[in-house]
Image (cartoon, rainbow, N blue to C red; front, side, top):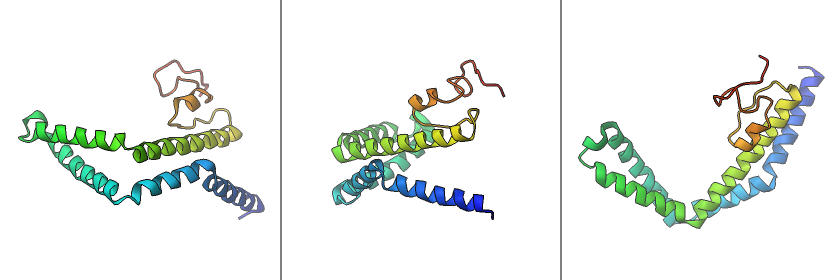
Length: 146
């Protein structure tokens, strides 16, 4: 291991500490705690998970499964109930904000290596600022020189 590698590892540790202490990370921790400390909400999530397993079984057979309509209706109702819960909505927003932070950091690191580095991101806003524009993986014409 060279001193250059040790420096890179130190910088990576510092970056991870900065990410973990960021406002987005704190919001995510708080939202996660709000959801998973509520016993009723945790039970709703478990019930939804069990229903998802039944849903996957029904999907194998499609409308020919004897409980197709019942399970399809129940899973939609449970999902709607979870989606309408403010704590779940806050958790989803916090997850998206944290993912945006990670995407932005990934792009900065990728660009510091080379403008030609392709960085996968989940947010289309960040994808448009990549070196390839919208071409390589989106079906558009690519302006990259590979």
